[in-house]
Image 1 (cartoon, rainbow, N blue to C red):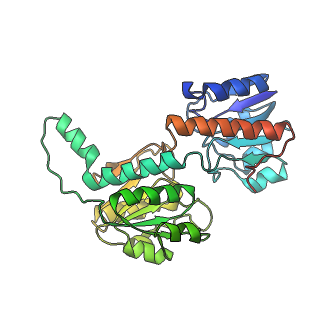
Image 2 (image 1 turned 180 degrees about the vertical axis):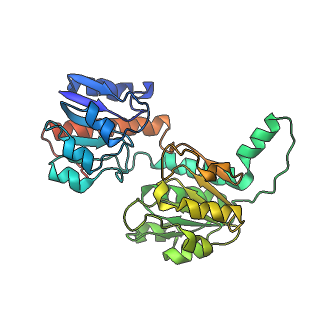
Image 3 (image 1 turned 60 degrees about the horizontal axis):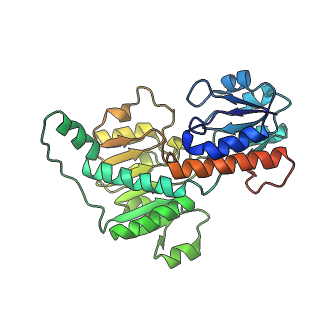
Length: 317
């Protein structure tokens, strides 16, 4: 049985156990030759004869599914998001799509706070300048006691909320399907989207990218924020209107932006990356040893369960 692995970090040494499990199941493994997320055309060109894919952040659009081989039965996402997979097109071809919910929550939550601190205290800029022989003084802001607005109180949003307690932050959250019990147990104020936008010293985005969230953080939302607000996006780039964010940051409308995700990845000639009040990371929220191991194990298990005809608990519906 031939399996394609496109997830760029799946074959890391940290995942030896999952790699061996997959090799024991498959007759042949085909690896991503590009070392980056693949386009639909590239995928079609390489997956001939494959029964399953351990999928990274590649683009599985309708054109891919129209040309995908008859053998293909499952796309097992090495991660939780599936906004780059056309689920309706997959269903038409009877191709099952699975994901790995919850396994990277702690890692992404850690990075979220790393970005908050980096933007608030100008850490990357200070590091660069001191290496160049300068001794800069930047006027930063504290996290302690500030208001944190969380957009999306899923597993990652919850992990962020719990970490906020260590900074004595006042936490509010918006989620269309909010876990009321969790919010009440942890003193989280349930708010509307507009209330989060208006009240947050820090606003952290943890929503999925879909038709209702695309461009959600645009010029109108940004206009309603505090002038000292810092926005953190460790979800998906398309949720934030990057042109509107650039304008807000260059005019001083808000204080700063921390991004682990961009609308186009990798970002090429992205104006946001020219600004000193932007801190960027390369969609690496889940790139810790622990998260990679859990994602690898679950993505392999999902793939094997589907191809073996067993029930899989993580099918995207």
